[in-house]
Image (spheres, one colour):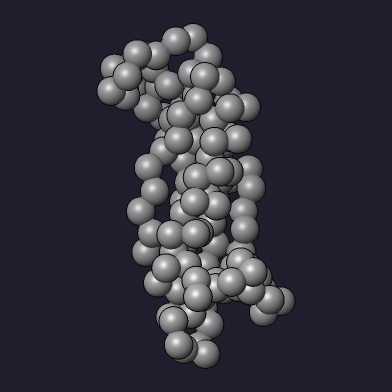
Amino acid sequence: MHGRLIFNWLENMTQYVAERKLLYSDKGSDLRKEFIVYLCAPYSVKEGTVNFPVVDGCSGCHIEVKGLNAEHPDVYGADSLQAITLACGRIEWLLKNLQKRYDIYFLTGEPYFESNGD
């Protein structure tokens, strides 16, 4: 049974439910590169897989970034809707932190933030 739980968890971590494609450049550089932020499908959190007490319905969401080195822990909620909501907030937090090192743009070339960290 434990092996099946791990399989389901890994399977959900590769099922993307949303993505955001953006561009970044080093501060002061005009060279822009694409990166993608993915929100993976929520998964059920089981007792013993995390360092907090788990109640029925507890869910986690994995955030994945491709094209840019960015660390991001999984996000947990009381249920799948809260996990997704918190993960979306974490993505914005992650992008704001990346803004300290990079200028971030939409694919149209417009700045992602009103002020690119100035």
